[in-house]
Length: 58
Image 1 (cartoon, one colour):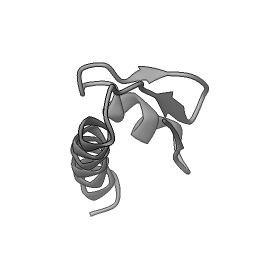
Image 2 (tube, helix red, strand yellow):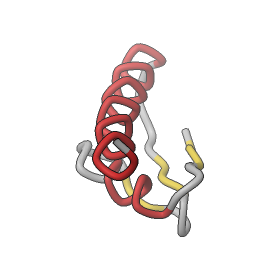
Image 3 (cartoon, rainbow, N blue to C red):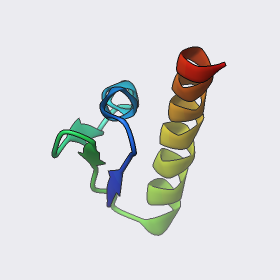
Image 4 (cartoon, rainbow, N blue to C red):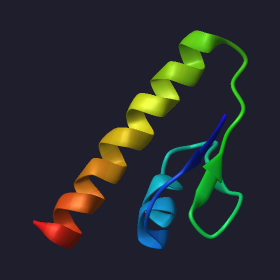
């Protein structure tokens, strides 16, 4: 799965999730064996990125 964010720092924040790597300036990507794992990783990424948005913009 590949995700694109609207700010570079959000992509950087998402890489703290195991298995998630940068694939572009504002993009991250990861591969999962099952859809269940993909969704769990997606939830982890969005939680981390949400915290990074709050940090940056309040």
